[in-house]
Structures are given as C-alpha cells and as structure tokens.
Image 1 (cartoon, rainbow, N blue to C red):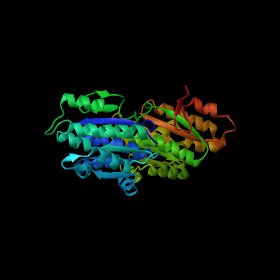
Image 2 (image 1 turned 120 degrees about the vertical axis):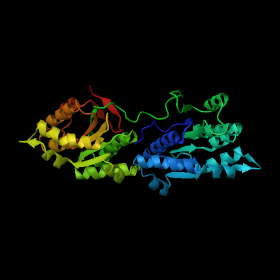
Image 3 (image 1 turned 90 degrees about the vertical axis):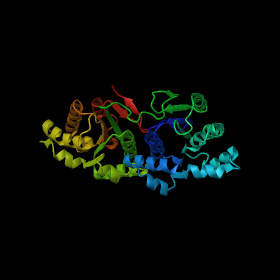
Image 4 (image 1 turned 45 degrees about the vertical axis):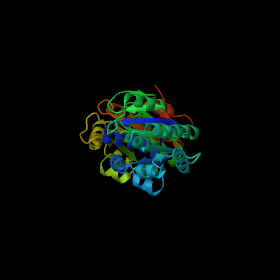
Length: 375
C-alpha cells in the first residue's frame, strides 16, 4: 500500500525551525512506512515524540497497536546518546554497533533519528557528521530510508557552512521555511492522479479486490482525503480488514466521517426506477454523502470506491450499469472525487462487455495497483 517510491536507500536531512513542522514531517514518514509494511524505528526526544504522536493520532493511524506489535519501535534519543557517551565523548563505533542491533538485513525497515540534532545542538557537529557517515553507509548497503532531523535554531544555531556540510552528507535535504529541496522530494505525491479520475478494476477474488481498494483509499488517507465506500457486505469487511492490516484506525476514521461505508444494494434502491438509474435521484442520494465527507471543506477531493455497477452487471442489468457509469461521470463535472469501480471477472465472457465498460473510465487498474490510461 506504499505511497512513496519502492523500498530504496534515501538518506534525508530535515532542517526545521519549529517542532510543529518537524512533527508533521516525521508523522508522514512514519505513516508511509507502517502503511507499506515496513518496521519503523524512531529515535526522538520525549517532547518530540509527544508532538509526533499527536499528529499520528490525527491521521487515523493505529500507531499504538503498531508499537504493541513491534512494528513501530520507539527509543529515547537522549538516553541513547547518553549510553553512547564515554568520558565525555560519543563513540561512533558504539553507534554503529547499536544501530546494527536494530537493523535486520532483508527486512523492510526505515529509521528516523535525532541523535545528530542533539550533537549539533551541543556544538559537536564533527561527531554528528561522523555518525551521519555511518548511517549513510548502512542506509545504502541495507537499502533503508533514513531521516535525520536538525534544529536550525536554539542556543547553537546552524551556520551556513554547517548546513552545507549536512547537505553534502545526505542524498536529500529539506529546510523549513524555504521551497528549497536538494535532491528529490521527501515523499511521493500521495494524491496520485488528479481529481475526477474514474478508474476500473476487473477483479478475480475478494482478496485481490480488497488489496487494490485498500491501497487506493490508503493513498487518499495519507494525503488527508476522505473516502466513501459503496460495496456489498462481504467486500466491505474485506476492505476494512485490508486497511486495518496497514494500521489505519477504522473506528477513528469512521467517527470523523473520513471513511463513510454504505451498502451497495441499499444505495441502488434509492435511485433505481423501472430497472434504470434515475439521474435526479442518483444526484440526491450521492451529494449528501459527499457533503458529509467534506464537512464544509473547500476544494475537498474524495476517494470513492463503488460496486453498484458490479451488482447491476452481475444481475444481467448491463444497460443500467453503463447508465450508472455515465451518471458518475456527470457528477464528476460538479464535484471533486477520484472514483474506483470494481467488476467481477467471473461475469464477463472473455472480453465481451469489457470494452463498453472501459469506454466509461479514464484508467484501468492493474494487479499491482498501477493505473493505465485508457483514453
């Protein structure tokens, strides 16, 4: 379900001025890792972890469960640094030995650390850079994302020459308060395709469908986008299980109306007239759901998954299904949403009917979750 690029070595320096900015960036870094199946190791001060955990809670991430299950490992940066200090000096070899105890080869992991920030704040930039060299080496050999935070202010503010040295020691650097980012951006675009995307997934099993839909919705949650799911009970449960397995807090998301789940058959009953979808009734049924998810937010983009068309297709009401696809496209002219539709492959004979369905969509979703442009 990863939103970021595939597992690879990224040694990133984050230069921050405010704890709030840092907390937001680190929370995103942690969320990306947990939702993509990576173990996340965090070495932060107690005050910073408190701020980060607040941000994580706001995202609807079940991070406390991740801690309990060992998928999110928390270490107090101050205590770790004290443990590495011998006769007033921090042991770089001790840092290497400590880090290798936690980093497991061939395991998908990522690390956020503040040891270097604490050292820099003490005026010991030389040791901080020596530790960075060790981290850089391990990040590239073991291919793990590594994010290091540096405070730009404080009693020992970083001078321009120090900042340049930090930039050289990393693959990428971001600096709070500037648009300057050296190297690629810290994260990939979680929103993905633009609003009004209308994609289709032809699925073969409940599990494969849940995986694709979970990834689609999860990408939206990471970008702060609410979601609407219109599905059968069997698929609703599978989608929720997929999201939960990637540490999304379903109860919190539903309580905040960031995740709205409704029954496909019940929703169809609200606007079907004489076996065909009625345009006015469809609009009257859908707009309240969209407004509930947006909660008055302007420029709100929703991620929606729907299988009402699949219910109609399986019932042999193919003309009604195509008509419903057209109504979704009309609604997209006035409301911002990215829509994924699911169709069971078992109800198509070879490619018969698929062409007509594809004509109503902008993208086809592959087994890996990649979107292929259709038009």
